[in-house]
Length: 128
Image (cartoon, rainbow, N blue to C red):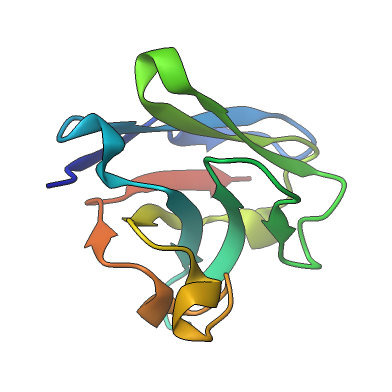
């Protein structure tokens, strides 16, 4: 099965950048859709970005479009979330999520938590 390990979080000043990594340390071909979510204290978890590892246009939350980029390195079995022009509202615990089937298979969308089966433990991002 899939085992997700996030890394790359930390503290950064407003306007700075961070790149988060999501490593699948489990079965290589057991994930085809990957999403990034975040949850700030006192707020609901929200989708940030999502992608099909087989190609196609990625999904982005409107609040991060043109600032965040989701990408993959299939050789490293890793998905990245590059975050530029960070602001304090981006501070949250960031989670990687994955599934074998794409959300559309279930009639769902990339921003729905129910589209994903596997979840990582999260990595903290703090912007000051």
